[in-house]
Image: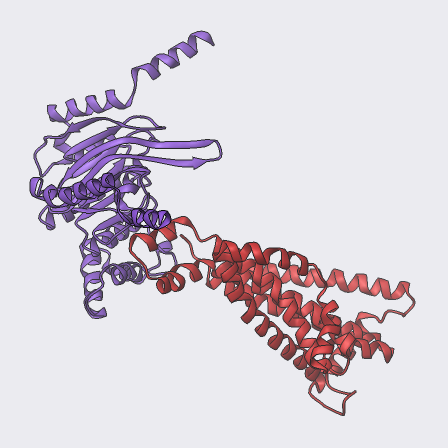
Length: 256
Length: 306
C-alpha cells in the first residue's frame, strides 16, 4: 500500500514538473504556446462529445482516435502475420537466413514513410496506402526478434526433444514456439510502438481522417491547444499499447 | 565397352567390404548368444571434434562392457570426457571411430530404450510437471491411448511423491523436486537403460543423499533389471550407488584409467557403509586414482620456485 502511494506521489510530481515547465514556456513565448490550463479546458471540451461526426472535416476526437487505432490494428496485424512465419523460417534455416538477411538489413533502416508513394501507386486510396505503411513498419522488429528467438532455443531444450523423440510438430509447438515467445512478443511490442509513432506522420501525409490528420488540421486552424491535447492523447494511447504488450510479455516469461 | 565394365564393377561390392558386412552380421547373431546379459557394449570408441584450433579428441579407444541390471559410475575430473562417453551411449554424440551397441542394436541416435536424466534437469519451463512427463511419454511410447499414457504419468509421479505438485511449473519447484521430475520422466518411458549425467551435482548434500536412496528404491522396485550408467565426480556417490566405478584419465583424448569393482552387499546403508573396511579401501583407491600425487608435487614445486 505504501509503495502504491509513493508511486502516485512520483507520478503527480512528474507531471507537476512538466506542467510548470510548460507554464514557463508559455509565459516566455508570450502566449504563443497555450498555457496548460487553457489546454486542459479545451481537452475536456473535446472529450465532452468525442464521437460527433459533422462531415469529412469535422469529426470528434474519439472518432479520429478510433480510426487511427483501426489502421494500426489492421496494419500491425497483417505485418505480424507476415513477419512471424517468415521470422521462424529465417531463424530455423541457415540458408534462408543468409539469403534474406542482406535484404532485411537494407530495408530495415528505411523510414516507413518512404513507402507511402509506393502504397499510393499500388492501392490508389490514401487510406489503404497508410495501412500499407504500417504493415511495412511492423515488419522489421517482429521479423528480427522472431528469427533471433527461434535461432536461440537453448541446447538443453533441444536435447529434451531429441532424447525423447519428439515429432517435428511437437518440437515446434512444445519447444520452439514457447521458447521463442518472449522474444516474439518483444518484437511485437517494438513494432506496435513504432507503428503508433509512424501513424501520426503517415496520416499527416494522407490527410482525411485520423489523429495525425487531426494534429495537422488543428495547426491549420491555428488551434495549438488542440495540437497540445493531441500530443497528450497520442502519448497516453502509446503508453497503453506498450503496457498491453508488457503484460503479455510477463505472461509468457518463465522461470527455469 | 570399357566404360560398361567399369559400371558393372562399380555395382559389385568389393570383397573386403563384403567380408566386413559378413563379420558384422555374424557378430550381430553370435554376440547376444555369447553374452546374453550384455546391456551396453562400447567398442573401441574415439570421439573427435573439429575446432578452430584443429581437431580436438575428447575420448580415445574406449572399451567398456556393461551387464544388464548393473549400475556403473563414470568418474573423472571435469572436462575429462565423461559426458561425451555418456552422450555416445545415449546417441546424442556420434563416435568418430568405433561403435556402441545398446540392447543388441547399434546406437545411431537417441531412442526410447535409453532414458536420459540431464545434468541440469532440462525440464521445459512452460509445461507443468505433469505435461513435462506426458509429452515425453507421448513421444517415446508409440502405442496406447492418451488415457493409458496419463495413467503412466500418474504412476511415475506418485512413485517420486510429486503427484500433489503435478500442476506446478518447474520454476515453482526446488532443485531436488525438479530432479525427481526428471528422473520420473526418464523412468516413465520405461527404458531398459537409464543414463544419468551428473544428476545430483547441483543439489545440497542432504537432498543428494535422499535422492541416492530414492534412485535405488526405484531400481529395486523394477527388480533391478534396469541398467544404470551414472556420470559423477563424487567418489562417495559413485561407491554408494555403483557395482563398478570406471575411472577416466584427464582429457584431452581421455582413456579408461581403471575399472574398480564395488563388491558391497545390497541393500547398502549410507550410515554403516562408510565404516566398512571394503568401502574405505575402495574410497582410498579411487582417491589415489583421481588425485595424482604428481599434481601435489607440482604444487610443491611451484611453492619452491615462488
